Length: 158
Image: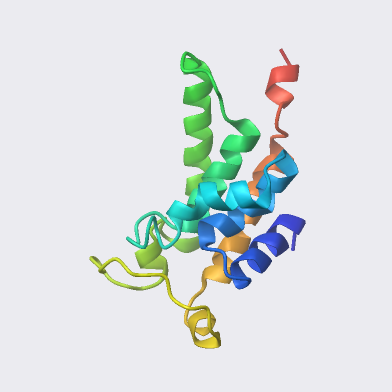
């Protein structure tokens, strides 16, 4: 288990949502405070605000990838295209592991689940959800990508 996998799992098990858990595992190394990173990722838990859409673990992975590889100029068209392709590749890796990128499908909730309120983190909560393993896997996917494509390597190669 990589350092980021372990951190993501620990963050989730300590009460952070899936997006926060993955984003926090990477963000502090990039200079974000835990508080700032947790706030940035807070909207994406439960498949975005509890709507059970895109899995929060994948959202956290995408935010972390943005920190590591993202662009910051509104005129960076080539960088934007490259980054979107990168995000699709990472999402494809996530989909290959789970068969979906949707929270509701990972949790087996069916086609149109009602939005949910956050629930207390109890032993029962953790027993019924694969989320600790999902956040760890999302962190592993990004770690493998980073190992194969070190951030900044494409800029220094020019």
